[in-house]
Every structure is written in structure tokens, then in C-alpha cells.
Amino acid sequence: MHGADPLRDLADACLGGLAEVAGLEARTAALKVRLAAEYVRASRALVPPAASPQEHTAQEMAVVAEVACVLTVSERSAGALLSDSQVLTAALPLTLDALQAGTVSWQHARIMVDETASLDPASAAALEAHFLDPDAPNPARGCPAGELVPGRFRAKARTWRERHHPVSIEERHARCAADRRVEFVPDRDGMAWLNAYLPADTAAGIWERTTAVARALQGPDEARTLTQLRADIAATLLLTGNGTASAGPGTPDGIAGGLAGGGTGMVGLVGDVPVPRAQVLVTVPVMSLLGASDEPAMLDGYGPIPPSMARRLIAGGADSFHRVLTDPRDGAPLEIGRTSYRPTKVQRQWLRLRDGKCPFPGCNNHSLDNEADHLLAWADGGTTGIANLGQPCRKHHRLKHGSAWTPAGATMNDPPGWVSPSGRHYPSEHQDWEPPHWPEHVLPTDDGPDPSIPPDPGALTDEGPEPDLPPDPFPDWHQFIATDPDDQAWPAALRDRFLEDLLLPCA
Image 1 (cartoon, one colour):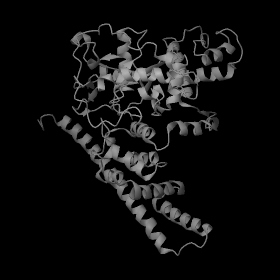
Image 2 (cartoon, helix red, strand yellow):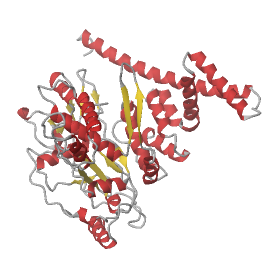
Image 3 (cartoon, one colour):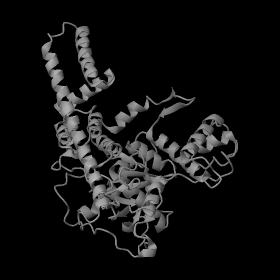
Image 4 (cartoon, one colour):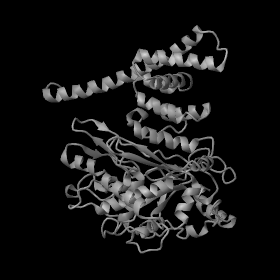
């Protein structure tokens, strides 16, 4: 009851005030956008038409300089504000309206501008509607855009953009792969940045392997943090291994060779420590795996990748990568490769697939670094089913046990939200699974849900470890991928047989 606890009332009032200030900042940003766009239009009308490109450039520079002086910011910042304002007022009306209403922040609006920059008007409008129009076809599920921290909103917007870009991701990847490079950027205090622009599978493999080695080296006698260990391991690999010699795995030359070969060749890198394998999930639409469509696959911890990259990862003997097939009807996870896994390991893989990262709102710590945890403790009657499991990162695992923050509300396909000490509920980010695109020559467009498919049973109610899973219905799937690296489609006869079995339930 209000007034019963004055201190609690004060805390609630402060939180409410912060929320109001955030909304006020968003509305102020929307007003600034409208004023900036109107000033550009007015200033252009006040001057005669430019007689040359040089004169036009001078006029634009004068407008930017004026705004920079009024706002006391750099001309670069003023130019960015004017550019964003023109895009928001001319091409992104839903975003500007949401900013005016205070339901998204200026950072969210900037991300929308960035992610639609290279899209045609129709594609940009579709991306905007997906996140901001609840009446759009297949709107975003889970948290509204404004309730996601900007970094997580950018990840979801980028994922949707990659799936729906008018240019195939294979074409864009081939073009961008030619730009791969390493950059050296000097910094302060005797430090520097070494940045590598690489294909996603290569970068993800390097990141997961350095993380795995760093985890193995941690212990009571290791004073370095995980971040410091990653940096030291990467530097040791680059400075001591050339990847060409055939020396043993404990030698510097064997280090790079073991890494390139996908083995555990880094034993002895900073001591005789065994290195666990990184485990990366690759979620592949069935039609992409068959080579029947160019729909992007999803690389755990990164996002959309070309299907040719996914086929290469799971067909080329990279046993650190585990395939996840998705249902060709609704996009839901179909099964996880489980030939060598007991049910407890399958549960952990399913958690990684369901959550994608630590389920605490706004946390970016992705699933490889996290451990499965009972939401309701086993000692208090909690089960070991998926609906009672989460995978918080170490920081938020400590938060759960050391404070009144409580995870709750998990299901088989939904990660748990969190309830704060003040009683407010904050939903977790949901994976935004989408129905895949059927190739026109495979099946006609679906006109609605299949009544023969049973409804979602909802949360699991199991009372202990899952029983033995049935055998994989297609254990030799990898043997039927063609050897051509450029077009790893299956032979027509085998593909038709598999499609016939797969589509039988739809008949």
C-alpha cells in the first residue's frame, strides 16, 4: 500500500522519474530532428540555386557550420545530425513518430537510420514496420524495440536486414570478402589496436578458440582476467606460430598448425594445459542445407551468414560446429545434431539455441560463456526440464544468488524474464524466428496454418532428466552433400527422396 513504506515509495518515485526523463529526452531528440530538417529546407530556399558543384558544396558547408555553432558541437557531429534528420523526416516516419512518443530512444532511431542506409525505399519501410508497426505482416516478437538496449536492437535489426535484403547474402558476402584486411591503430599510453576484418566463420572460430583456451587457463593461481588472457593468447599465436611447419603440438610452429587444423594443438601455449574444443551452433534452414534456396543461416554469437558458409562448416569436418535444422514450415528449431550427446548435453545445446545469450535484459554475453542454471533451485523442488533452466552469465548468476533479482517465466522456446527487487518485471529478449521462404519449384505458397499440426503444448512439465532421445532419423545427412565447394547442393534423386519424407506431414 502506498505510504506504508516511505523509503520504498521514494525508490519507486526515483525509478519512475528516470523513466519520465528518458521519455522526455526522446521527445526532445524528435523536436531537434524536426527543427534541423526544417532549417535545412528554409536555408536552401533563402539562397539562389548553385551555379556550380563547388558553390553547392560551399552552401552545404555553410549550413553545417551554422548548426555546429548553435549547438556547440563539431561540424562532423552537426553534419551527422542533419543527415539523420533528413532521413528520419523523409523516409522513416514510424521511427520519428516513435521517437516523438518516447517509446524509442535517439540511439534506437540512429540504429534504424544505419540499418536502412543501403536499402531501397520499400525494403527500408519493411524493416521499420517489422519493429514498429504491430499490424505489419510477421511483426517482431518478444520485447518491443524501445525495450531492447540499443546494442541488442542493432543485432536484431541487422539480422532482419540480412534475411530480407533485396540482394542475396551470397553476393554481398563475396563482394565484402575481397575487402578482408588487418588494421593497426595507435592509441594512448603505449597501446594500440589490431583489428582484423574477416569472414564471419573465420572470426567466430578464432574468438571461440581463444575463449576456450582462456577458460582452461583460469584458476586460483591465474591473476589475469578472461579479457587479458584472450589478448595474451592471440598475441602468442601471432608472434610464435607460422602455421607451415609440421612440428609437434607443443611447439610454437605446431600451435598455428593445430589451430588451422581444428585440433587441440595449443597445449603448451602458456603451460601444459589441455584445451577444450569450442562448440558453435550453426542454425540452417533445411532448404538452404539442401541447396534449394539462398536463405541465410545463423552462426551462434554472430548472426546471419551465407548458406554456402554454413554448408562448408558442417560438411567439412569442422567438429567444433554443430548443425541445427529448422522446420521448413514455421522456422522453429527442428532438432540438434545429437549422435554423440547424452540428454543432459542436448538440454544445454537447446538452452543455447533458445536463449542465444545471457537472458538478463541488455546483456550481450553470448551462450558459449554461460552455464545452465536452475531457475527454481533443485533443493526447493525445481526440476531439470528446459522450462526451469536458464543460462545466465557469471555476473548475472551472482546477481541472482546475491540479491533479490529473480528469473522467471521460461518455457521450452522462451527465455526467462527477470523480476527486480522493486517488483518490476523486465522481459528477456526473444529469438525472432521467422518462417523460411519456400522455393517456388518445391511447394506453393502456404495459405494458412495446417490444421493437422497440433498446437504448441506450452511449457514443459517434466520432473527430472529427459529420457533417452529417439535415434536421429537421418544420421548420414552429411554424406549426401555434394563435394563441389561452390554449389554443395544434394544430388537430385537424394534431395527429392528427402523432401518427400520431410513434406509427408504437410500432405
